[in-house]
Image (cartoon, rainbow, N blue to C red; front, side, top):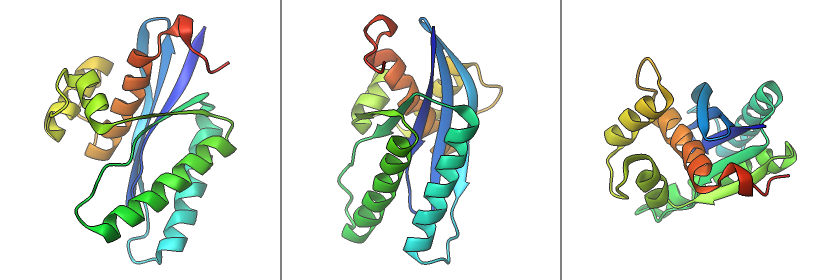
Amino acid sequence: MSDTILGIDPGSRKTGYGFVRREGNRIHHLDNGVLQLSARAPLAERLLELHTGLMALIGRHHPTIAALENVYFARNPQSALKLGHARGVALLAAISGGLKVFEYSPAEIKRTVTTTGRAEKGQVQRMVQILLGLPEIAQEDASDALAAAICYCHRTPPERDTSR
C-alpha cells in the first residue's frame, strides 16, 4: 500500500511544493517545484493564484496527505500576516482536495531531515537531495516542501497511518 504526500512551503510570492510516494518504509520522489505568484499583483489576486495552482497540482498527483510547516514567529508583522494568509489558502486547498493535513514545527522538520533543529537552508537542501536520490539540489522553497513531506513519512509510520 502506498500514500502520495504533498509537502507545501507556503509564501505570498512563491510557494514551494513537493510530492513523494511512501511505499512501506521507502520514500520516492515524484515531483517538486515552486509556484511563482505575480509579484506586482495585489495580495488577494496572488492568494487566488496560489489556490488555483495548488488545486491543479492536487488534481494532477492525487495525494492523500498534505504536510506543512507550522507558523513561525516573524520579525516583521506584515510579513507574518501575509504568510498567515498564504498558509490559510494552502490549508484550504488541501482540505478542499480531500487531503488529511499534518503540520510540523520548523525545528521538527529540520531535525527529521538533518538530525539538528538548527540546520541551515543549505543543509536541508543537501539532505533532501540525498534522502530522495535527486540528481541535483532542488530550489530552496521546493526543498523545504519536500522536507515537510519527508517529515510526515518519518513521523507517521505506515502501520499507524490514520489517514484512512
